[in-house]
Length: 177
View (cartoon, rainbow, N blue to C red):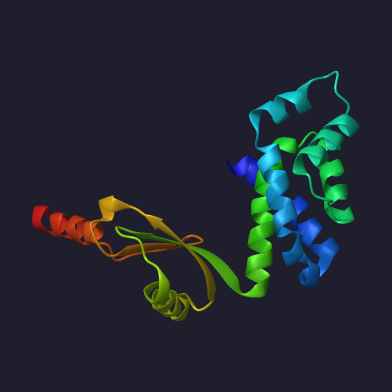
């Protein structure tokens, strides 16, 4: 959804500039909570109801979140609702998260493996991947049995695929070419 990303970018950048790099990481949880509420289909239908005011939508969203929102996050929520952009809130949160991570020199990494990776093996793998990608990684492991063996790592838009499945696909292409 390029349109949603285009709508979300200025909101995410404005929030980041308003709170500053020192306080931005502390707001990630609040933004994730707002994104979860705004991503709910019932909430979106409620917000689209012409009989419901923007203030009522803000009140319901903040009530569902159940945590006190930072004043700047509250202002962002009011602005998003006033402008009819509640469906963009999950993308705003994702872009805010990406801004915070990029500015702090870290990235999220999804490590797909045929088998669970834990403990020392995960620590060693993350250290190797940090050298390979040149930045600190916050890794999440996902088990994907179809890989057969090896790992597939996704960091942003970069993919490192050393799985057995990928190697077999390369061999298949080489043999059929």
